Image (cartoon, rainbow, N blue to C red; front, side, top):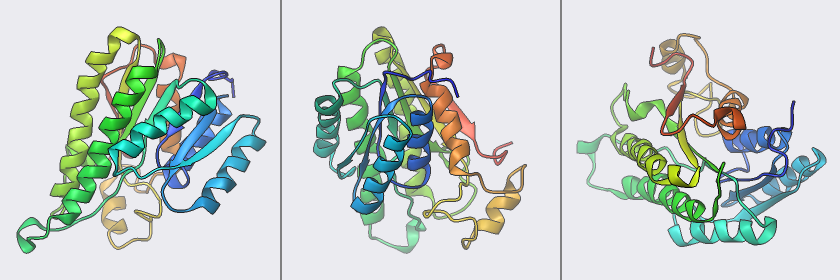
Length: 248
């Protein structure tokens, strides 16, 4: 693979496993030095750092709680202090929780998802937008459910992802003057710990896709790799759908 990101520094939130780890490896393969955040598993984080360094790039893991906007802002500053620059931000950290609205008065699920899926993303975009230069890339992982709900119990989650997509479009307008592109990837069912391909609703999800299967984290990472590359210089304010045809 051509090292089109050589000399660049990328930050992936929630990058120690699943889609985030696949994105970290993809960007490292393209030559970027990689920083990523994690919240609980230091062992997994350090293992990934070693793997990325073995690929010939610089790497570092930072513990940061995505639900705390102050920690997210500090994370961006810590990456600048460590690497001297930031060129690519991937907002990958997120949570997925369900619940039928009228069956509970407890709003804690929504509040947690709002803090992580929206406020953490907004804090990262604002902090990165202040320090990135021309050619900067901001990419947020969204969900095809933002516009195609498909089942009950998803309203709280859907609201957060729809907000991410709206913010992506607004930020693309604001940051275009600095030469920074801002995009999102609308992800369908992907085989991760959060949504395993043998989970309780996996048959329904597989049956709803044109390809009849779950996606692999590496397939989402490939889309992010394109959006982070110079080849995507004219793509901004876009929601790129990678859902195996679920929304077709």
